[in-house]
Length: 470
Image (tube, rainbow, N blue to C red; front, top):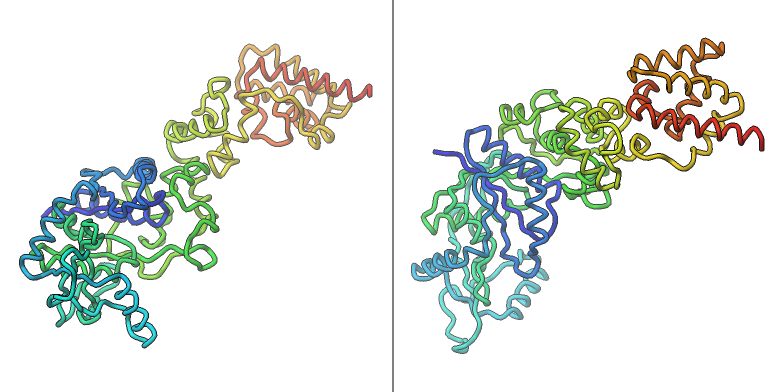
């Protein structure tokens, strides 16, 4: 039997972190078992589903690299199939028409809740309802068994048993003729050959209802794995107030997909004490049985640590591909300076996100109008004029623009003027970057380039002279 899993989001919003983790677990299990992964768009909620949300889900999956063998399938394109099977259940006496008005059902539920009872349909139309008008609207309800229990072995939570008397006859076709979520899911999983269903714990209550429908249709019942929710670091359910929850917002905030995948896989699954996992290692080591039952808390600091790790460790060409997006987003012309591949090893140590790296690298690509006020006040003083002028002269004369040659120019300037390296280095740093912080000066000047560096030092010398004369 070929293992086949699926990710089946509802397109009523972006792809959020919890959904991405569910998709990752499903994808990893299929890959681990040499199986297939299906993407299905569950768009039966016609009022809330949007094309924008569909596009956002697909974009998020592609950014994460969670490729699929089949799909995307759309439930709205399969209504004929659902209705065919609903009609079959009607003919077999496994479903029935319910003419109860919304007002009657609402009043029933209110009374049950007032009595401390579980709110559920009372089966009023289960055996027929002759007291309705010929043209009265109706829904189709599934005739749930009234005896026995539904028992299933969940990969995460172990054996779960639900008494059928706890389950009411759920609606499988609305009065407007559209099939409902719980029925569509069953038919889709059957038709698509899904063998393992990995989804959030909020679906546990749906599972026994769906198992009864599988059995009524004569369909094989897949295995289930219900994963716990993700909490914020304050213990509350993860939401926008904890920061980004949309997968593409993490892209926009400067995270690498490899970092987010590594973080999400550990958010409820573990392999010993290992923290860093390549995608290949995730696939090799993943198992549904190793998923933790308890909820996991999101920790942004840990994600930032992972992100910087991948910025430093991934091949620079791979990081550069993602960094280029941030350069475009921040309107920095990457062609007007060093290659991104050359920039990354120098700047990744000083940045936790690609967004931060791009923002702090602007001086490599653009000239600045003014020096940072505090840095200039401290380092571009009259005493800096001589070292800046001398080091400018030496740098301009270089025929070998290398880190070693640049370092030697700075060092020899300090020696000739009998100054400490800092007395040359700090004014020089402010001169070429506009601020008081940068990577090592030899690498910084190397990337800025000879002509641009010499020109900027000249402006700093002029700035110091004007300051001395004012």
